[in-house]
Image (cartoon, rainbow, N blue to C red):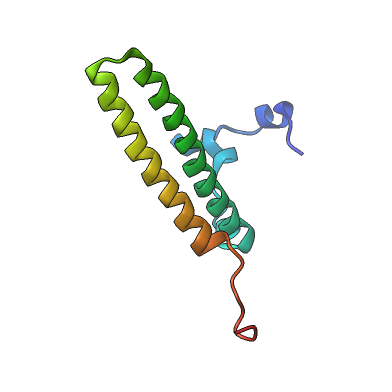
Amino acid sequence: MLSAWNRRDRPPEDGAAAGLQGFTVDKTFLSSLKGILLETELDFLRCVSASIIFLVVSFAAVTSRDGAAIAAFVFGIILVSVFAYDAFKIYRTEMAPRATQGDQ
């Protein structure tokens, strides 16, 4: 395990990426089953959280009864429906258990 003392004893590395060594992406993990499932779950959670946020903001905007607030409410409801459809498609194609060839 490297500590701050060990890093200080080593010679400095060249390049801009030297300070970003801990933030590298492991491409073998992302191509594995766990990595694919993680990406799918994050996409699904992004859609659900965006739907909730836009729904709350839309209802908060419509309380002022101004013309622009009504337009913001309609736009927010349209965005909620788009994000809900996206979440539905992600769930149906990637998260729902698929029937195997033998079960058909």
